[in-house]
Length: 457
Image (tube, rainbow, N blue to C red; front, side):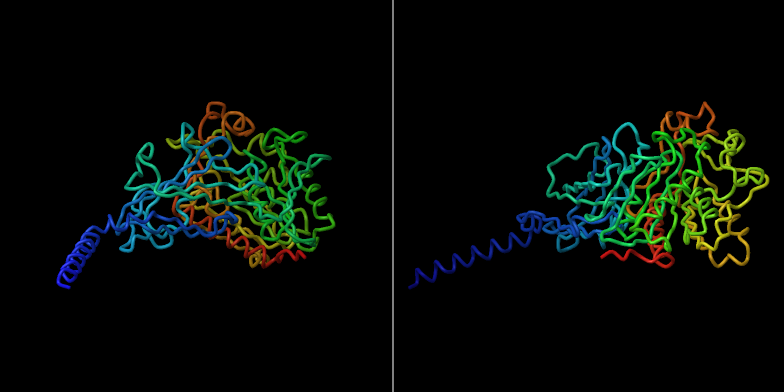
């Protein structure tokens, strides 16, 4: 009996020693559990926020998150450094990034702070094939590796997040035959749907991302190419407004379109074209201009094909350390606002106050010159420290782009000596990224208010 009691005492003492050792070394105890990363949702539209939660770390352990995605042959990467809480947990909604491509509590910072990796630092992330989602790999490494050229260890854990512009049941219909070039996106259902024409800037003419996303929110959308494709002009100021008008009128007559709920959306030169189209067609009920020029010189009013001979002005393009500032090129003595209001359309103007391509003062001019009876039709939203490329939420910020000589040669007003230079967009990353999120919400609210949403069945 005495021997049994002694054995029990020895065993009890051993267990107590093991417990004391585990408690005195939190890292040893906790690290026995492999860190686990939870992401929700793992597949979603690009304008949706996601939650990332990492558990199983040591109390206050420092870790580095690395996100990357490959598009169009280029790699884009972001990093942030977190300190786990006392329970060994990191949560992107509440945890503060201490270092990396962004700092502070930023739920979607891993996405909007992505930067191109390699020689072309001014590479813009543009999704060309919207039928396939972007696949982001998120890896977690021990310690602070924010500045390391390459991470120096195997990841503690990793996961893949898929984000798409095009919801699973949206239809994509390329326009290859006939006169028109572009793509029609149809929401899920049979319609009839409210319909939009969507146009981008003169350096690209057509980008399908926003149109696909608008269709995912219930709007039949025509992503129209107006330059560079077969049979279309190759120079910016040769754009044919009659072609754009005919394309939109053809689109609005399709059987699945509700011709009483039509609108136009445009960025940069596409914004100018959206305003111009709205000034021509009374059936357009709502128009969104995102940093698009909203004036023309009085002597060229209503004559797009004559603008490139004298305006924008070649001598106005300025070179800076960051790239070309295009805003002085649009100076003119006798500006006239594009009368997008004259048929009663509702107008939303989205302004980046640090735009280095279209000076924000022209939006003020547009606002000041709208006739009194139409002023209630206009809404202007201004974002400080925000640049030219206001895109859908959570897309990476870029302050200057590198279009390349081939595209720069299509700008009538670009001096020869500047055609290999970068072009400034402006903005500052955090403010610009927050503006993109807010602007997109307001654009959808505006369209819903004046056009409604899809009635698919």
